[in-house]
Length: 106
Image 1 (cartoon, rainbow, N blue to C red):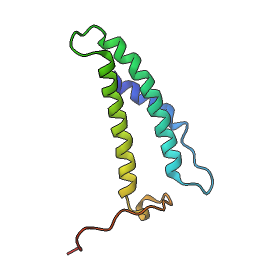
Image 2 (tube, rainbow, N blue to C red):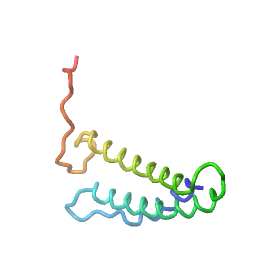
Image 3 (cartoon, rainbow, N blue to C red):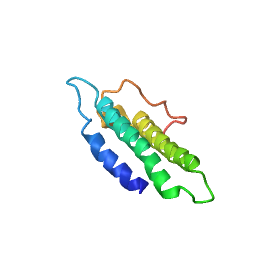
Image 4 (cartoon, helix red, strand yellow):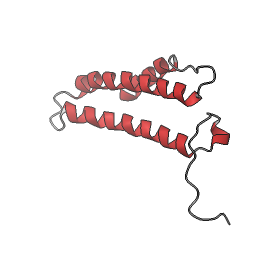
């Protein structure tokens, strides 16, 4: 059920992805990610409360916070991937560069 809610939130988030002329594409993608994440976070509470109330093992609040941790990990993975993707393949105009390799290529 949480997956279905996330898919619907992602669809809504796509309507918030637009780039400003001359702007960075990643800003537009992050805006869509933020909207989808916020909608998912709100919906997760209702889904978790509806499905897990009275389960006798875990509290609804703990399960909800677990789902929020998953959203946070997803956002972190997106940012880490963007950081380590070379600017030539990313084409986002990012000014950050990944750190140099630890060893010389062989």
